[in-house]
Image (cartoon, rainbow, N blue to C red):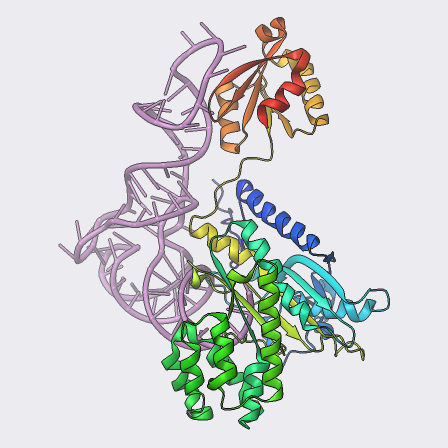
Amino acid sequence: MSNHIITPKTPTGTMELLPREQIVFQNMLDTIRQKFERYGFLPIETPVFEETNILLTKSGGDTEKQVYFVQSTGSRQQGHAPDLALRFDLTVPLARYVAEHQNELAFPFRRYQMQRVYRGERAQKGRFREFYQCDIDVIGRDNLSAAYDAEMPVVIADIFRDLKIGAFTINVSNRKILSGYMKDLQIDSEKWPLLLREIDKADKIGWDKVKENIQPLVGKVFDELLDFMQQDYTNEERIRYLEHGVFSFIGAQTREGLDEIKLLLKTATDMGAGDVIRFNPAITRGLDYYTGTVYETFLNDHKNFGSICSGGRYDNLASYYTKSKLPGVGISIGLTRLFEQMRHAGLVNNAPSTVKILITMMDETLSSDYRRIATELRKAGINTEIYLEQHKLDKQFKYADKAGIGFALVMGGDEKAKGVVALKNLQTREQTEIKQASLVTDIVKAIS
RNA sequence: GCGGUCGUAGCUCAGCUGGUAGAGCCCUCGGUUGUGGUCCGAGUUGUCGCGGGUUCAAGUCCCGUCGAUCGCCCCA
């Protein structure tokens, strides 16, 4: 009797999968990678930890609370402050990367990156402390056309269609529209982030509540605009009404924002993604480093999942690390959140095993034959496993079934004498005989 | 970091107004000779989150503590 068993459990806020779910997850990662490359993005990876002075530059102390620090035992024992921390997104490491390697990179630099990030926040449904982000960003030198902003949601739409996650909507807007308007109304710029954040919450808390919340900040000057935003207009109608009527007047910055959105909508339509993209001026995103286009994606049938893919434009990515001006635009899929929520909603089925065929150990004295067959099948590109202990056949089948293996090969003395093997389809339970002479080709045919 | 709920076997839970623990699922083995998801039988598993208090007696009442979970902040 051991009293020293420590209850095994995964740390809160992490996602851990069984193999047959992991296969599904891996397939999603593969799909995303393929699409990213199809659209001309290049892979990079960066370390999970960065030096703290690099990671915490832009933090006003707010991100610092969410960061996991990393420290060697020695440094800790000597009472030093940690000099490393785990990345909390892939954008800051990208900024460092681009600033560091700018002389070797070709601009506009299009990179994709799919790695885990870490946030020391309170875990909740759909909120993890360790999760995957799948990012694409384009970084320009000095300037970067808004045409790049327009292309981002097209890539995402293509991916989400492929992933079969159900109906989704990519909300897009442009911060210049509202901030330009606020500037024109001579609203104190310190209030902008607060205002935008309140408006951003509309879907969650309702428009009346938003009006109430912003009242102390700006009075009622936004009420007409808010009334407009909650109407269920088409993208075209929204643009049209904004350009004619809703705004009391349109300044240069607002104009620019509207033009960029128009370009985005046109691009999306040209590239077949127009139907899933929605111009929604209420989307502003919390992060204050976005300066233009912003994106936020929801599943239509599961809005409560939260955003599964967000991003936006930032005018100067790496100002902390270089004097070069490096504007960029990027978007990030929160794959862990997406996957976990889909799983919770019963939308994820166990995948078949990556093992295609199990060679059962019918008769241990025929082991050499099993090894030879396995070797041939593997050469032919078939994932093959040999059951290496002579257990009862039913146990071997149970094993294969539980592991999700589709086929079993049985060969005992009888089959060997006849020059055949038995191939059993574990789902249909059908069993066929295959001649050893044409074993590989017949099996390839049978199981594919 | 702040607020609400909960904490009994690996999982889901039962345990009436206090008398020293149970069900189902899962898991393992078996139902004789080379064929699995059903069925039948047998078996393993708990310091009832932890610490203290009240009591002859506490899983059951009280206090504390830790953990989980939901909401806020923020975010994928």
